Length: 477
Image 1 (spheres, rainbow, N blue to C red):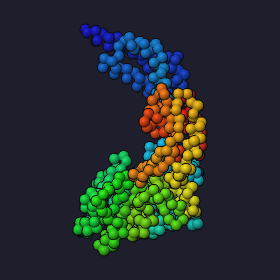
Image 2: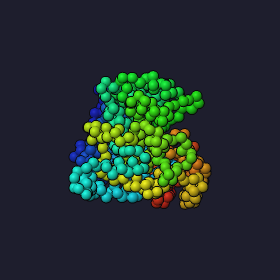
Image 3: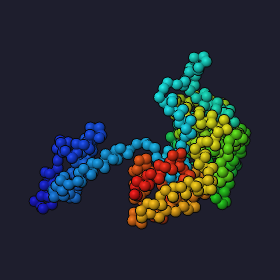
Image 4: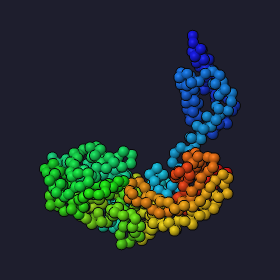
């Protein structure tokens, strides 16, 4: 027998049983801090990992003995418990400057919207019953009315996200007789976050994609030439997270609406982010550029406009569809709608967010306030943070001009001037500091650039300035 085989045999012989680990006095206190089944799972995973190392010749008896006798066993299991405690959805401090950060939950809600959601979550509520008559009604009647007032559309309906909105739209207009083709510009067949591709959604919805035009130029004549007996829908898609510049041309929603009326075909415009602007809404900065406005899209005359509720709108995750009364009624009749409809909690948050807009309080919505903030308005906060951190050992702290981003594919290529705190440590790598901050309580997310941490005040919520300073001090001091 080879010496390697002997070493493996010795190591296997030394592997403790789960029962032995459960009675190890060093581990009893650790195990008491998590549910028993979770603790048993950690122990089994540990033994199995060691077993795999032995099989691979990476762990011999002597090394294993050292692990069992020394601090490695406690350290490894303590790390597992730490990961368990840090898992799941918890509040974080977003110091990245990315306002609509997909990884961090996109738009933070207005406190009144969050409170409305919490209230109905913990109680019964008026959902599918009319308070006046006591008869059953539709759960989103009020939401539809608020959307009508907000956007100028004849009616509205809301599902659980914008991808679901597109799916419902396409599935509803499928198979009108022998009609199963949806015509879309080749330059608008986008892929957004999470590998969400418009052609894939069309395929799953059961429609046949009919591409027209080229990547950079599509004309209304291309739509007209492609329309035929199998056409069920003429569709325009906002490219959201990319731009084609230079020798370009695209069909306007008004042109598409006019062609639809001429040919007797329904038309739709998927806006993606959905920028709410109007007479009673404080406009976002001009830097938002050509991001399409919901009211403009509705006014163009297309039958259906869909957009996200959790991006530029600043509400909870949802996909909104507004437009002509008959078109929205057709969506509501589709059995698929029931699978995609909102729960009471999201409806409550959206209703309150819309009410804020309609009460001329849209400027209070956190994401909109963050996007409107100027560099001069943000600089005092950056100076306060820097002053609080300059005494940290081995650190160089300064306030420098930088740029923030809207995020989540909204207004790609748009950058918002800001001032950030730049913190560099003479002995510790910036990436390691950023990792420690993510493990802090509460977790803090920052940018890492040129071996320094960048702390952007644009995306800080009330109270976050103090939380950020405390977290940085805790991982460095």
